Structure formats: C-alpha cells, structure tokens
Image (cartoon, rainbow, N blue to C red; front, side):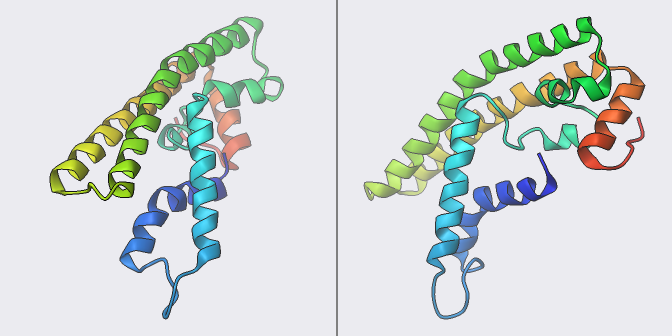
Length: 176
C-alpha cells in the first residue's frame, strides 16, 4: 500500500467523526461529495477486510521492516525468494486469511450493530459504549492476525531481502 492509501484509510476511519465534529465541513454547510468519498472508502475497507486482507491495519509493521507475506509474494522475483521461502510465504498468507476472515466477520457484525443502534434511534450511553467496545475488540483481533503474520514473515527473509523489500515498498532503505 502506498502512503496515499494510508491517508485514505485514515480519512475513511476518522472521516465520519471529523464530519460530525464540524472539522470535515466548509463553513456554511456540508460537503456531500466528501461524505460520498468517505463512504466509498469505508465500503472498500469493509470489503477488503472481509476478504481477510488488512487495508493498512499492519502499516506500523510494514513501514518498519516487518513485511507482509502478500507483498513479499508480489515482489518475489525482485527479492530473489528461494522456492522454500515462496512456499513458506504462501503458507503464512493462507494461515493469515484463515485466522483473519472470521475475525473480520465479527468486526463487520459489530460495526453493523453500532450503525443499527443509531439507525433505530436506540442509542444511549450504555448501548453505544457496548457497541464500540465490541467493534474495537473485533478490530484488534483482525489487526493482530495481520501484525503477528508480519512478525513471522520477517523471520523468513534474509537481511538483504528485508532491505530490498523496504526499498521497493517505501523508497528508502530501512535500518534493521
């Protein structure tokens, strides 16, 4: 993912809160197009995460020398992966999907419950606190599945491969 996508993810996840607080508006009214873009980005986030992929949830790892298996596989030729490394990356990626998908389903259900509370005008302090706690616990589970896989992925690569990966993904060498 690029840094631009990181900004889009940040907007998608923070955008509704910013809009509610007035920080996402121009003086004198709302910006329907901006809200539509945020909603579209949120839908894309939901779809990608539901598929078991991270959509930026593992950025802290990837940016700091802990690559993810999917991106390593995408760069396998340029990283000169050995057949054993490629097999291990595929195994790590598949295991991550198996772990992340049910967690993502719990996240989607928790987010749907949160939206439903407001849609049904049933929001009160206790209901909102409970729904948010459930959603954030579920989000943490998805994120952990990705971050822990990044830890395992890093250990499969050589130092030279990790450096090359970082250069290819982020444009600058990363100190170990």
